[in-house]
Image (tube, rainbow, N blue to C red):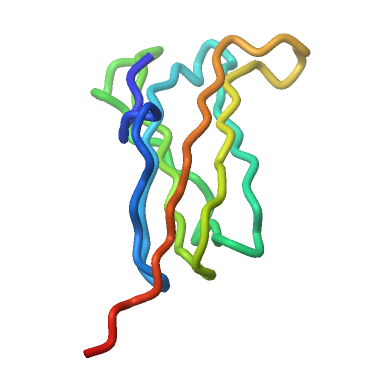
Length: 105
């Protein structure tokens, strides 16, 4: 599955600014992404949105999560890909978020 940004590198964001995580999915097969995060550090700005690759029935696309940084420091977002009725995860990603205070000159 494709992931943007690459979970091997930390996401750098300035306090108060937003960032997105896009995860490839096939919801017609029952699979969806769910994210776990520290709500003291970041906010999920709105429910995830799904953007299909095309209008073809049964095709895949991207699940997009939009966040905003609330507090300086480091935190994690854990993304889990599974069917809601199954206990086993098909895939998981861990994103490291580094939030810096805005420079004031």
